[in-house]
Image (cartoon, rainbow, N blue to C red):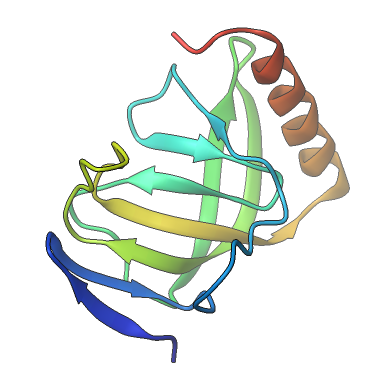
Length: 122
């Protein structure tokens, strides 16, 4: 299991290795959704007062954009934040990694992220 440590603002658990930045994909802040804090080709951060357990695997489904394009993927919880982190403005919630996403849904996600990068967050 990943490391677990207590911060000043509450427990933080992660399966991510300690050290330098490990993200492979750019995160896009999603302004039109209360629960989806950020999104990338590899996963998302979902705001939640009761996040799933670290290591949990579940079916993640979300509607993207004004056209409400639905994407689905098996996802794994890789980080849990039980309390908000005001230092960086991140809410309580969980970081998820997409495990099994269809080629079609992946291309839909990439197109949506490209659209988001071209317009300012509201």
